[in-house]
Image (cartoon, rainbow, N blue to C red; front, side):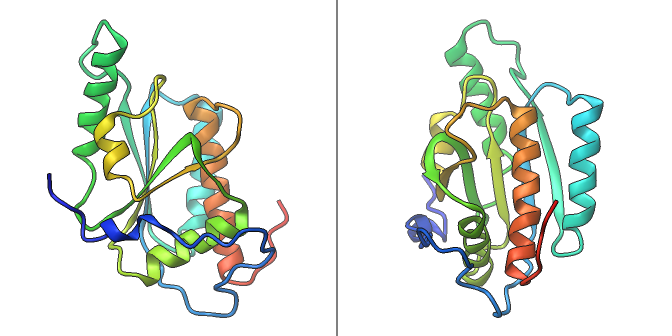
Length: 185
């Protein structure tokens, strides 16, 4: 198994309880962000919201929306489906990319901590930042091993459409925090 050049980056310094990003007033590299979602086709309403936030985010960094169809080989059992989705996701990960796996058992992060996560990845040499939203049965073993960190958007389990809306809004909010701007809607 190849080891990511960022493998030692797993222990991210997410400040707890801080109301201000540790990067406030500092320069943060505009690291490219990719959002990878495993799931069915998005509804029109969700896609409109994602497009709106993508447009806003592009003022701060380049951002790509990568989608993988859930159950790409129409596996009949859950384990096979997870394995096929896992292989598809792994095919999209770049060797020097910093990978954030979204999972309900991950680190509980607030908006300021998300901003710090982005600032850390940008300032510590990652080529880009990839956020992975799993399919209906979650993430596979390979992604779990490759991810630099696992975070949760909520204690609730969210379907992929809701998760991508929450994530993309939080990425935009994180950049406004990093830039010292007030974000209110």
